[in-house]
Image (cartoon, rainbow, N blue to C red; front, side, top):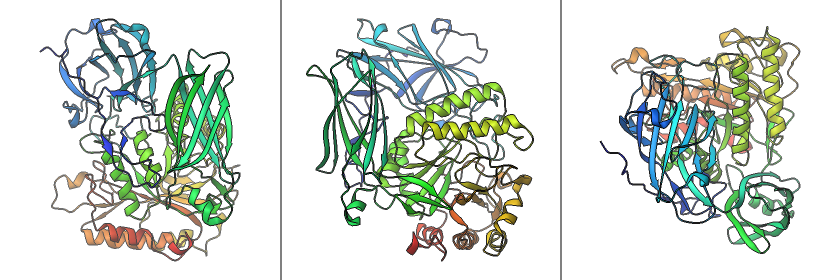
Length: 620
């Protein structure tokens, strides 16, 4: 079969958004929403593909035969890829030919994510290698282009399915998914794309804000051939048709770091119009131009927002006010596409459903989500806890891998206003001996402080669930589904010291010795897990859940009673219910895996917002 004539197609779908500032209206579906330039071209679509189970091929010429076609960016384990092979495989080869875009300057090749290790050749010449299955990487391929008018990209991906010393999240190391682990996602699983840039261009942008000072923080790093002097950035910030800032800044040594004052609008009514929150997700459009000696070198579009998150005593604060977090835990999987969303519309729909269910946030569990999800959370107004996928062994290599990849995650995502917390560890996964082993404790402490160093603007949960050391929020996991038991455990009659000394599921204590609770907010960040699994459905014996319901009416009743109890516990500054959707054998979602509600959205919303404590709608 001759596979060299696959037509390359440019994906430039448009979507309609609700945000009145115009960010979400008829935007091209750009894979990097906070640094958009035109033109760009998607390389998603059919690629040649082959497994190399024996690992004999070290370069493209070693591969004797392309055996499959694969639909990129879907992993070969997924049915949507056209392959659907869930057996153990470690080595994967991809190849795609496309028409070389015309134009001067540099040609960049971008990969959203390749799990776990990737090597890239262009026109038969080796370019680079990247390790880390959840983060993006970019390559300048200008020097290997030829005069043929076509360019060939070849990728080797390696993903050992049984390697427990790499960040893998919920990907199962056994052949078939078991317990709370799911099918593997190997190789290319996010968008591959190319873009033309000038000889000098904006390589990286970073935004942050301080609403108390009415300032937006802006950082930029230039790439390519950076001029020594006479380089300026022209910045325009606007909301709708109103220009807030139109300034020019000098760039020194290829970098710029500025605090941009917006001017305090005064009365609260005007102030609130400018602030970003789930209730009013106001975004600030940014147009950024790079100039040198009167010549335009680069132009990009971006966005930011004015919002601040912090912890004040025992409450989480949003824009200087106590804000109760109602989160739902989301694994970020789809039946036919696994970790890759089936479409951009599917990501938007997830955000809309979460909000319709009464939640104001989501805890993305054991997954670094596609930037397009964060874009829709920014546009539509949804808070996000971002959590690093765990490794399951403590080794020097595991520490090095996680540290490097987590640093890349924070760099990629820290400009999104929707992200309000970082979670480097969950339930002591990868550090199973925190109580006894100093090295495990030091690892958690190091990741907590590294995260605070890389991003001092957000709370960090050192180890979500139990066995806390340094942390900004004491996060508790408790899957007792009896409301009265939870009220007895966390209600007003219970002394905080007694509550902290109780052991939790798995026999774990909440705080380690020498790391006492210091008044931080307390949140119930995993609870519920109620599965619906009637006896007459197939494979019902394989269903996972912490409690099982036999009918939908029973599930609705138990959810309502449980949320009523949690909402009445004033100790908590927020909660995270497990979970958003059914995910493979885990049948404990409020929605089925196809996003169909198990009982009416209106009823889910009413229960989510129930209660008369701190989190009552009138007080939040």
